[in-house]
Image (cartoon, rainbow, N blue to C red; front, side, top):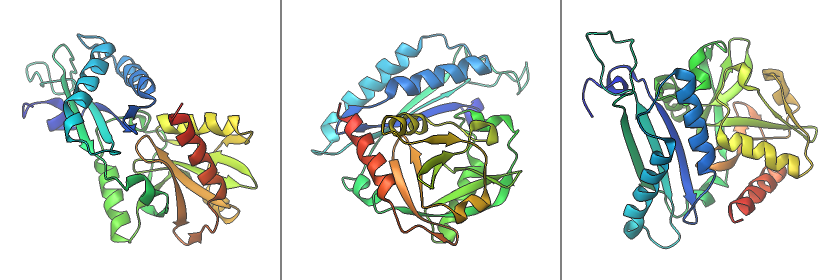
Length: 270
């Protein structure tokens, strides 16, 4: 990658992270569809089809098969930037006639899923985010704020940081979407609150509906935690992970969370 790449100089880029489950890619088409949608929304026109990214991804997986122990899986990431900055046009002029595309494959630990089932603890970020800031709705490489927030979580002995928006409402984690179980109902903030609607988030909503659960997308004030019975976070790599604690709120039950996680894993095996 050139040191004049948009991604290197200004953190301008899009990415998708996903994984194999027992050696099988799941929801890959959804990730490609979101990437394609984000590219179109930003006016970035790649000189090749999204199908080419799928082909390169499958080749990357195949190239790493010999390094996989039995039962192990891969975490994969596709990153696309507009390429090299044309300083004659200006650092704000994005062109994708020669984009930079990188595909990473990382080995997941054999006990990765078992450890996540034990649950995470979360804290609140010491800063609030503007819900109107446009960057949140894209799967963008501009992750400095999330890096700082995750560092804050680790400094507090926690696993994840939950962002509050400028209205003081719950939004999402640094790399996760948030769900709350309250009075048997599944609650999650809508994208308009200033968050990225993840692929796993949409799958969890679908699975929960199939289970007959009532799912409600609405603004979630901080006070909702007083009534919450369970909470969990989602993304395409961890799947569904129960939260055992958010700040001072302790959750003593993970029953519904683990049922959703179990049904999610069952769907992966279809």
